[in-house]
Image (cartoon, rainbow, N blue to C red; front, side, top):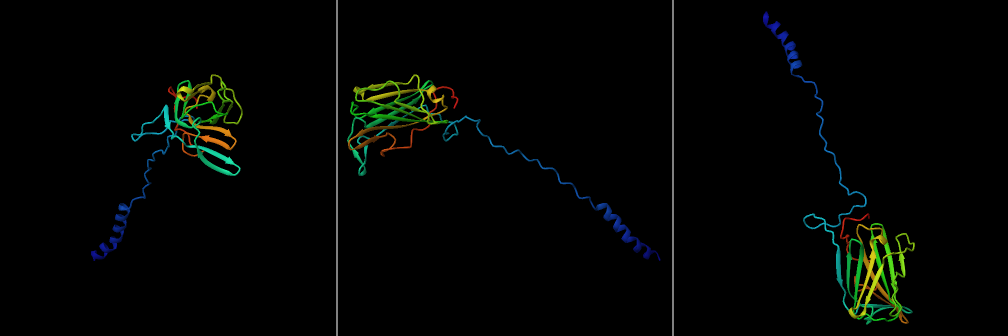
Length: 230
């Protein structure tokens, strides 16, 4: 008669074993989440482009060559644009150096001669915006100060220390713009346009392409010194 007793105890044993093997649902382990942060340069800091090794490239100077015979005559009545020979404003070369004290621009012409009233227009772009500097000659008379100097806000400015040199024998015009006039920029790009009015229209020349106008300038040029104040 003991067999029924053993059978009766079997469910109790099974329940006991189940209680021993059942585990309380474990609390999920906390996971370690690495902070996701992006590295951004400090305001006003610009390392410029990098080469194939990831090293910052900070050019100080650049030189451009421009083909001869690409001066454009832009007429308004009737509207037309043609290429004409105008060697006195025909740019054949441009050199820009961003020195520790000034931005120096050298223009080379096909045949620099005092003809009419030509204007050299510099567009100097910096982290703060674009500055415009015009120098208009009257024949052989070239002013010692800019004919116009405008800041990024559109207001006229003075530029103490500006200098210009005209060398017809070498077909060269050199312009020196102190960095202080540009608020000591961390970098600068330079766009050049030369123009001269004529009875038939206005002559335009730039060393950046073969069109009358160009919004493209040089690459960013960094001062030959520790970075400026931007």
